[in-house]
Length: 638
Image 1 (cartoon, one colour):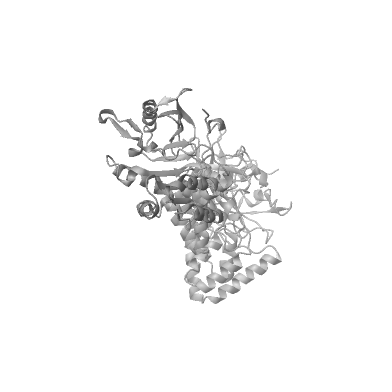
Image 2 (cartoon, rainbow, N blue to C red; image 1 turned 90 degrees about the horizontal axis):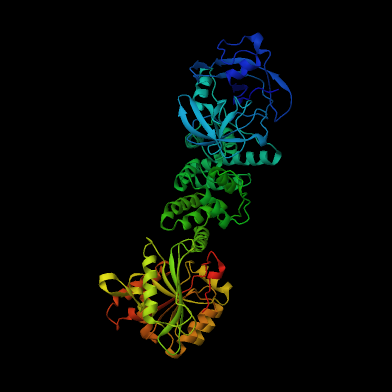
C-alpha cells in the first residue's frame, strides 16, 4: 500500500517527504535521525503510469521536519536515488511562481484524483493551502505529491501535510526543494522526446530549421527563452532548445518570441510547429498580461464571452471556476489558417462587452495577432462582430412610451414603462381606457422622466408609434423642470422613435448587427423608387438619411421598416438637397455610437428657435435586441 508520493527532480532522483520515509520504516513521524542503508532497503517506489514494478532506492539527502510547537519548520524532505524506467519519466521544471490556483494528485496519480487548491498565504518555507472548487480534498497519501502550476508549466512546491480538523493543508515551496538539490550538487533538468514517429519527425524538422541560426544567435535565443520561461538553466544545443519548447506548455510561443529578430527562421519554425497538438499560442508574458487585464474575478465574464463567441464550446455548469483552465481550453482548440484563434475571439468578446474599458484588451489582441502573423483584416472582422453582439441587450435604463393619438383631437391613449439595465420593469404609468389630454400625457411623462433621471446613465426615451404618426413632434413635449417651469423632453436626454410592431424580424436583426461593420455607412434616400431598388439589393445598409419629397416621406419610412432598416433620420419640414445639406453633418463617422446624442445636441441648440433645423429632426432608432423579462410586456394594447 502506498504511503506517499514523490517528485522527479533530476535524472535518477526523486524528492519526497521525510515523514513518508519515517512512516514506511514505522518510526515516529518527526524522527530526525537519518535512516541507515539497512533501513532504506525496506523502501520501495513504483511508477504507476508505466508499470507495477517496484524499485529499490538509496538515500541521497535528508532534511527532517523540526517540531516547533504544533508547526513543522525547515524541512521534511528526503532525496532518493532510483533508476527511472527511461524514457517514460522525465523531470519537470521546478521554480517559484506567482500562481495562486494550483493542482496536485493522490499517491497513485490517477487522473480522477486531481485536486485543486488555492494558495491562501506564505509562511516561511511553507504555503498555506485552502481547498479549491473540486469536491476532493488532500488526504493521507498526498504527502510528497507535486504542487503543479499549469499556468507556468512547472512544479512550484510539494504537499506535506493537512490539518486534522479542517480542509486546510500545507506545502513546502519550490525554493526549499531547489536548495536541497543544490546541496546535493544536482540541478533539475528539462527535456522532452517525441513519443511516436510522427512527433519525432516534427521534432527533427524543428531542429533542422534552427540550423539556420549561428551558434552565437542560438545561445542568445536560448538565454532569452530561459529568461522568459524563468528556467533555472539554459538549453545548450538545438535539440535541448526544441525539446524544452515542446515539453513546456508555453515553450513554443516563447521560442517564437525569441526568434522575432530572425523572421525567416521564425516563419518556417511557426509553420512547422503548427503540426504539434495541442499547442499554446501565448507566451508567458502575454498570458500574465492577459490575466492582469482580465482581473481575479473574470471567470463568469470569460465563460459567458466563450459561449457567445464559440457556441460549440462544451462548458458544463459543474466545471471548476478556473480562468487558467478555460484559457488553456481555448488555446488548445484548433483553428484554420488565417482565422482568428478562438481565444482571441473570446477576448474580443470580453473587450466589446466592457465598452470603453476594453481598449487594454484590444491592444493586447493586436500584439498577439501580430506575432501570430495573422492578417489584420481577420481581427477587424472579428472585432466588429464582437461589438455587434455586445450591443445586444439593454445595457442602460430606458423609458418607453407607447402612444396612440386620436385622429380628430389633441388626445392620446398611452402606456409609459420604465425598464432598468437588465430589462426589468421598474414602473408603469397608464392613461386608462378613455383618451387623455396632452397635458395629462405630459404630467405622467414628467413623473416617469423623474424616475429615469435617478439613474446615472440612461439610454433616454423611446416613443413607440403606429405607422402614419412618425411625424409627431414628441421630442418637443414639455416636462416639468421645477422652478424653471417646463422643458422639452428631448432637450436634456436622447429621444428616438420606434414602431409598435416589427415586420420581418430577420432582416431587421441582420442589418442591426452589420451597422458595426467598417463599411456600413449611411444611405441617402432622395427618391422612393430608387431607395426601393437599392435597399432591396443592399442588405448591409443599416442607416438611411431620408430626403424624399413630402408626399413620399411616409411611404419611404414604411419601406425602410418593411425592409428592416433600423435607423432612419429625416427633417420633418424639409426635403431634397436642402434637407441633405442640413442632415449630412448630423450623421458622423461614428454614427453607430453617437447619433442619438448628436440629434439631442442639435435639438438643444434649437431651444426657443423654431426655425432652427434641430427643432424638426426625427430619428427612428429601432434596436431589435431588446427583449423584456416577460414577453407579454413587449407590445401593450389599447
